[in-house]
Image 1 (tube, rainbow, N blue to C red):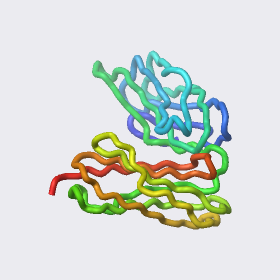
Image 2: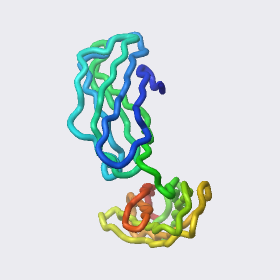
Image 3: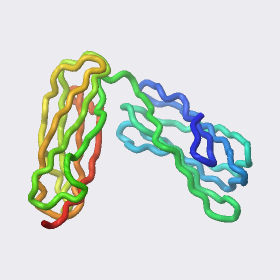
Image 4: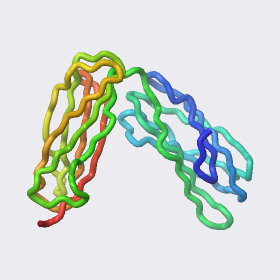
Length: 214
């Protein structure tokens, strides 16, 4: 089990196939104080990939060294990340805790979109070109995938930056692809990279860039 104080936690299983499943969240209080009136939730970082059904579950108290298990139903489409959260009371004060993201593998994809990175200074200047690079890793033999780059501007416009057909990838082989954007507004730009196997989305990464005046 993993630990983020004061909770020891585990989500299982984390290797499933597409469809409806029950996942079991195990929680153990390894702290020195009672945790009471807990609202326990399992949350998705991308509901398109994995969505969690229903509302949170209630625990009256989780005392030191006490362990509990709770089941959550999910609908799985693609590999994604979930995290657990607790809200309640500890020693007379409001208490909030959440786990790091937990990877849940859904089926067997041919590749994964590992990362998206903006190759720029922390606060780029309006009007200067920014290069965004995505890394893809093969998980099995693939004949070529579709990679799209999009930008959401500070004004809310959704602009396509590039659409790339990737090369054939073998298992464990990596490849990098890039797109460029020249911001004309100051403010927050959100860059999205989407990886598709035919029409099925198998990867999504996000990068945020804050653009300032010259």
